Image (cartoon, rainbow, N blue to C red; front, side):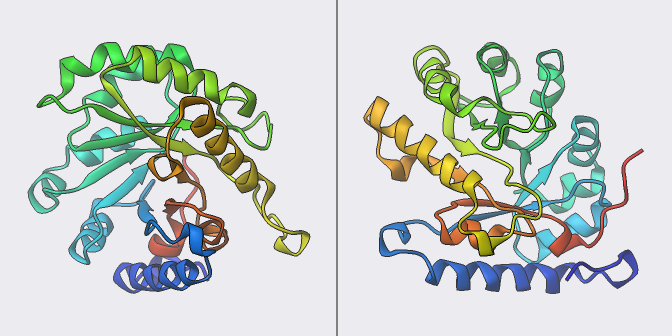
Length: 252
């Protein structure tokens, strides 16, 4: 159940989610037991003190949807001092003209929303100007599995081509996997979420076309309302916000 701002207990929420993740893992088919899902705590619109609380409880991966908000939080004196091993995931839309801004973020761990060759190429060209060592920039390809106009992402039929582009032409990028946003309010009584089925199919098509092991292509699918189902279906990366941090106020 979502909690109101006055009732937020971040540490309890985090522990509860981690327990649910462990339970969901046990329901997986044997062939999906090879990887424990990574939890990305989505902290958009939340104050830095709540992020620090979650960090102190052991959480390291945090997700933000808005570039300016991520820049402000990542450069916060409290975050820099108290969360030295924080790993930021950007999970919102990225425009090519905002590449410099997003790449300037301290402790940027991954961009999960690469959706075009143009964006991948821009990130690849600019990353050497910002990285602190020889490490590559981790990315995921966002796939619009539902075909909804309101959602970003590449068409599923184009994901193999984009993967080849990154693999062949973007030596400063490390392709970690693919991500999708499932249908909101999907009724599981109708069967497995078709968005998750489609993302798994995309992963299989990538691996078949490029000769990759499926264990090396992560699936980022599942949020507060459906992460348990996503894990049962093979998700290796879940993005949970309100179940940890409580209700989010609407952003103006």
